[in-house]
Length: 459
Figure 1 (cartoon, rainbow, N blue to C red):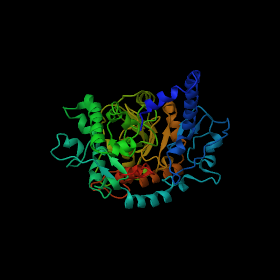
Figure 2: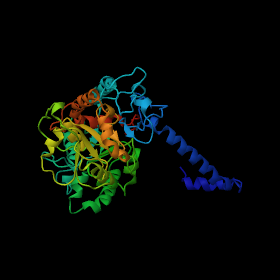
Figure 3: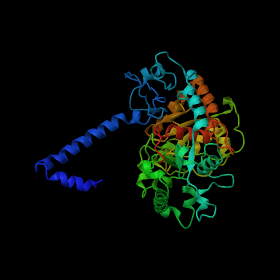
Figure 4: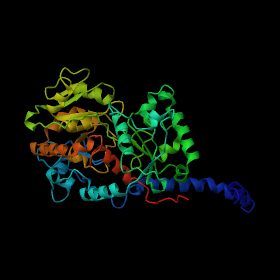
């Protein structure tokens, strides 16, 4: 077959000279039309016909109140002070009642008690069973005497620390029934490098990870045929440290094509593609069963503790540092962190350097309703869980209105939110070995949703 450049050269002689004057303009027009088509159709392109979810956005609010919800695609809802909300949430006196709206939950006026913690529980359970039966992952093999075996193979100890989710997942996957040694049977291919472990390797370090990943992709694409046949679209990697987001700078195909399961899942930052990629929950490992404590024992309205490393946290502490109901701390706590979570009705997850922290999982573990102050956060398991059933998301510009928002939630609404917290917290826990519906199986389901619908030829 002739080289494309030769074919183009042959055709040039037969084309009128003025044809090339119109080519750039024509190409620009078609490119613009394609981009516009892509923008307006992207949400449907990435969702299987079995998993489309219809969201009813509130329309036509009245002008009688200063707040209205803004519903992002991840299913949680934000409260904003910029627009009226009275017709959306109900409430003649303008109080914030963000979980009892007829227009938000449909014409039947369903209350929070009627909302499932899943987007579609029946489909999820049916698909979950199918996933367990048929889903297969091929892991690129590495020997134990490999110089970087510590970065490729699962750890032989109980994972710990703030970024343990990465190690928990690999450890569970490698010992699961999802693994196949026959790449012809694989739905997806796992790139087993550990960003966290490479970061601490003196031979690589934070500055050398980009080159390491580039060389690794070059090696597997030369040695095996699987990467090249799809450009990496049926491959995935897992990373929890934020450096994982920039680790693919010299491996553009990984960033653009492969499935990235990462903790730093922000719509706002480059390198993360919603629907293609998925959010990994950042979970501080705990081995004990979650504690139980009644609502009546939670005396504080809201609690936060953490470093002041972002404008959102700085604003939170500025407004609420000395408040008697909202406890906003920075620096070292004088009381145990767990006691503060157990004694608060709401626990604040506030964006730091990144949108993600372990505070959402902390809140759920201790039965505290999470308040999410992290704009553009693609929340973990957003394809599966109905976040508005167990959390409240507030845009950071409305931090000064935080007390008004939380006070406006009725006792019945809070009871429903907290009841759902107790239902979903099992999905944000890691176990060795994993158990049904825990964090490992939820991540596997996210991957299953992203598997290719077309089986490529293995010839």
